[in-house]
Image (cartoon, rainbow, N blue to C red; front, side):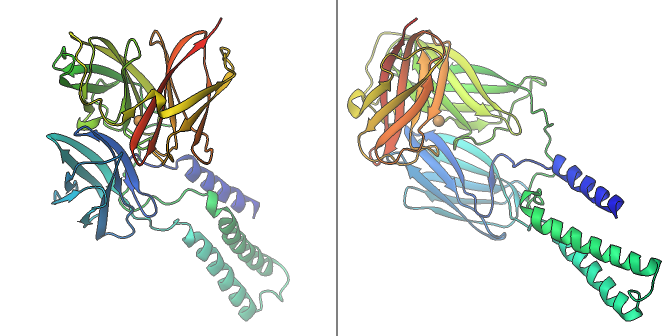
Length: 421
Ligand SMILES: [Cu+2]
């Protein structure tokens, strides 16, 4: 009996240890896939709705901040190569039909730009532990009935003990599974990746190359910022980014003087390649920070820089969103923050914030010299006051930008903080 239980516990432990973590871009019952994209000068969130059955419908919605162009969509099943087309705009979702679970690709086009988003359609198949529950009960029931019929319980000695012990074990296994089920790993859903390729230690860090096209953009002219990602070990393109905070990657571009700030969500234009179109109004050095996460691995912050050639040319289009120091009153507590201690940053938002990237508000902080970039989120304060807790690591001057979304779009509130010695 004890040996049996020991064996069973070992089996459970083995399954728990080898359980595969959730994959990167999945659409499954009860879970929409939300991906922020900066495309055609607009900031939007693409929502691939959850699927409950396959073959069945797959809906794609678009949320604009504040608006979004009509998107040309193309859905391709990687398994059989079937392609279907559609268009989507805010309030006008696209409806596709998926014939198979497993890997798919959604190509998104607008304003001459194209993103390819790989994702998997998954359908849950139940926990997979039912066979142990029903099996245990079935064995117990069978033995009890058989035991009663043959009179095994009336006899003394081995038969009665064996029948009782095995029946009790069956009931115990069933009961144990019923109790433990919420903590047991679920069976991978239909369409899941056959086997996770990463190890428990995570995947190697990503090496990045940040370039611009053209190589030396002119102030006021549109250019493409290109981030190429390479595996630290193999040198091959990294194409296993996990969606975190509703994006494959978050790119922050600031001018060295801190007067230019963009927080955008580049498009995946090829495996391991992310691109976003920008326009900078003044010449000089620009610093880039990419926040991303590889599947089964932790988050990473990659830095880079590029130079914009002169002369200064104020652009008519400041990029997606509103950048306005008057768009919110900022209060820092204590008023003179100390290095290495948490400070509270409160922003009185102009309007009612709505979720963007899964949060009510974002606070991005850069050290004046560019050596440090921090990013924290609003703490769930109800109403139009946004509260952040931020710890400035060392004394110095910091450029900060609080961001929130309302019906008017994304508002960025720039401010600076001095942390004395
Ligand atoms: Cu972002």
